[in-house]
Image (cartoon, rainbow, N blue to C red; front, top):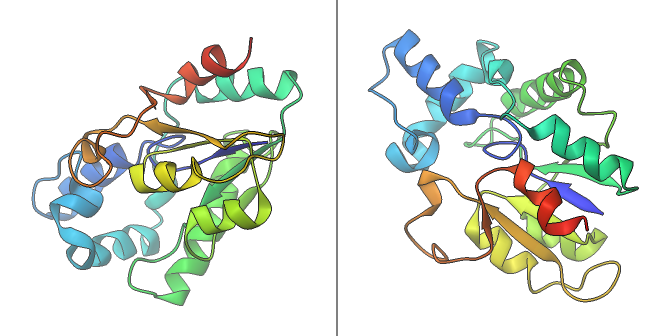
Amino acid sequence: MLMVDLDHVTYDLDRAVEKFCRRFGYPEADTNVWCYGFGEKGFAPIYNHMIRDGQMMTMGLIPGVVEALELFHRAGWQINFLTARKAIDGDEECTRIIQAETRKAMERDGLLKFGEVIFSPGNKSDYIRKHGCDIIIDDHPGTCFDCSKIPAIHGGMVRAFLRDCPHNKEGEYSDYQPRVACLSELPSLVLL
């Protein structure tokens, strides 16, 4: 089973945030803005504004995502999308909106034909520990580190690949390996 994160792995959240910040006059955004430029509390109002304005799921797919998922699908892999996908500050209305919008966008983009979306109620590694997988790709180095210590469904340990992004090059676990530039690199590393 392959678990795939949404933001920064499947969807280009940075581009959506940058466009949104320019449109609504928030301070100039960069690739670290979603959490690292403003800090979690500073970004919560922007994130929730994006959700309420219907802008969150206007972000496009990262190039090569559908083709990579198709390769895994044809090879018989079960694919699921695992995401926290909730309002940063606990706003339940925003959480309901973003989860519904996420399903609509994934349907629009043809992703749900590959597998289901799972909205993790907490830590992704806790979900993996309880439900299992063989491979995960995520942009959070701590999640990858934690998941790499969990037994995989089909033996060995979970193979956790970190999607290389500007926001995960510094800080705890910033030296985590293996890194991939994008999801489209994964089939060549996994499917022989």
